[in-house]
Amino acid sequence: MQDWLTMTACDLGRGIGMGQIDPVELTETYLTAIDAHPYRDRIYARVTHDRARAEAKAAQDRAALGLRRSLLDGVPISWKDLFDTAGTGTEAGSALLKGRVPQADAVVVRNATAMGTVCLGKTHMSELAFSGLGLNPITDTPPCIDDVDAVPGGSSSGAAASVAWGLAACGIGSDTGGSVRIPSAWNNLVGLKTTAGRVSLEGTVPLCLRFDTVGPLARSVEDAAHMLALLEGGTPADLRGASLKGRRFADLQNIAKDNLRDTPRAAYDSALERLRDAGAEIVPLEVPELTDAMALSGVLYTTEAYGLWRDVIEANPDAMYPEILERFRTGKNVSGADYIAAWSKLKASRAAWDAATSGFDAVLAPTAPILPPNLDRLLTDHDYYVTENLLALRNTRIGNLMGLAALTLPTGTPGCGLMMMGYPGSEEALLRIGSAAEAALA
Image (cartoon, rainbow, N blue to C red; front, side, top):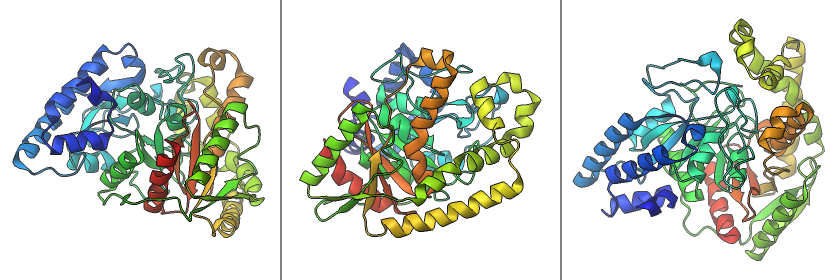
């Protein structure tokens, strides 16, 4: 049964379908592992034992009757602590929301539950989702799988840790500037950033509604494809026969490779060679307009974030981690005219990006230019915190600013991911390409 803790979600689902795995035994195996784990309270904010057992029993009954609702019916997963769960606290990693207990599930939780997934609990996250590091002195900071003295990436930090440490078959997180992809890369997982507006945000604690997205942190591309389908009540991408032969990729040169550190650079270069060996054509590409778009980030993100949270924050600012408070307040004095002008400029940059990338199946970049930073140093060195946080988010933010679907894959080098960026709404095509790339990188 301990093997169940490292199997992909889809393999667990197939085992249930063949009668080889009992959903109740599977859930109890996960709950036992969670409760016995030395990092349990650093990974899970709350474990939902009763809900998990009830959902597992229902899945067991459906399996016995041949009425399973999806491949993942009976598979236990975790939820980032910004997705509302009826009767269970949802506090978004912040003391500002302490004691907040929603009365209904978020739409994505309701959808996934209706298709049979089992809710193990709520995972820790960066405060109000406003950091790519995963550091949270207010609640807790989960450990990184390859270095427990390093942060795991954020803001979906606990989501990644729950999967990497064998305490969930899949984790559901959110991605506003990289919050699914960074922790996925730093914990050697697959992470899918969906296109803004595709997956419902109803019942999700917001950060920046125009950039917020929902996506899975998973052990395989297949798992990510099936979880996406469950989150929105759709049909999984067909990954059969996926190949890189004849695929044409852009290797993004500007922005994405600035200050790229040695280990991520070597991992990325090695990954590109394996994609070429599998039949892909990879062409260097520069998109000069991207520089202008990146410069807009401070105005676009902080203004909306502060606008959404101003009244709550200013009613009790001392309850926040100062680094996060400072970041929110950066948006305090941006004028409405500057905010509107920034969006106008971003739309022009998006048009230039679309034109420059139209001949490619996907654009490639290192997921993060750095490895997971040291936790203690982040807590004591302000300049280090600022530098590492901005670098961590730098490459992934490209996908958010350009409004893209994006996928990160493990390269085989610990903590280093390969990011593939597709067109808006191209998740199924991107997952198919990602499945072929996953095989080439294995």
